[in-house]
Image 1 (cartoon, rainbow, N blue to C red):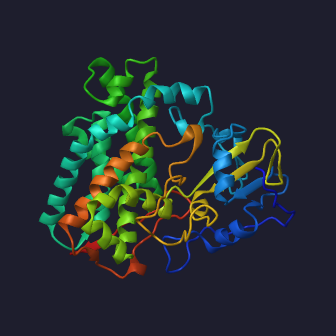
Image 2: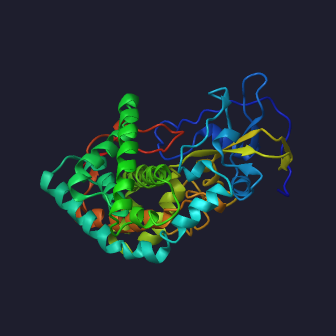
Image 3: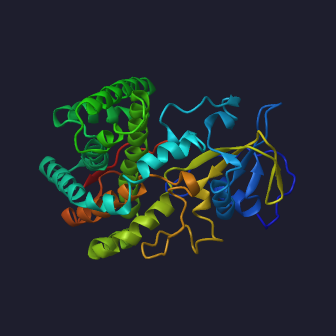
Length: 398
């Protein structure tokens, strides 16, 4: 970085909690650090390597594009664990560096092109319409997470992976358990069952391929464990994130009625609206990178073995990059946001996520033009602000 503004300071321990009454905004402490110390030393146990918190847009973007910062989990020191993290599971592209990362990514990139994802629009539309029919049939009030925000991307994952129709009910039950933050044991059990199921599915696809992404991959040199691991990675990357964008995005629109009305009255606004909601909400709140060699970043002396924690939600609200960043403005040119990352690890399935959101938001608002919260806003149960952010449920009526 050309700018130099780092100064020596006592290690900080900022809260990542969202401000009371403002569930869509970054922690006030992160906002304050971004203004004063966009690269700050975090408190860590005695004898630990350096751990740094980065909150500025340009600094976060620079790190994500710089291969001196490693995505390998085992290169990242977790201050709460007091240790370096274990290696990524087989097939988890987010925890790999080149060349292994590029070997797997090249196999998938051609299957996630804009053109191919746009071809799925008709199927997304059918699934969305069916879920809205079910929501209308059940009648108000309804939990938007259970009847809409989760089932739409879950069924699209079933389409991508070629999950047989008679197995989809069980499969979607597993995926709902994965999102249950109130029951860690249920999450672990569901993860184990899904892993076993996906390995079995990969073996079945190799023996009898069908027209789906997983069958395509059986023609590669991937082992069965790698096939199952890649399937689990695609599930994890493409389900929870999109489900929470649909639910939290609807919550944000309901709390900004003028913006909701603008989108409801002008569905052609949806492309820009999706980008602004991605920027504004930044549900993949934080990430980490391991420092592979000594680096000076904004004057901060990062050493090999150090770890940087990147606050994507703070970076996407940086006023140096976006004017009035704390305002949700669906007409804002939000291109360049970091919600999908940046560089070689930029989200592989971002085009599918965009297709799902561009279809789902206008369809929801057209079907239920009087949609509103069924509980006070401060009673909507929020998820952990440090992981994939969102809501556990969103009670709505119409």
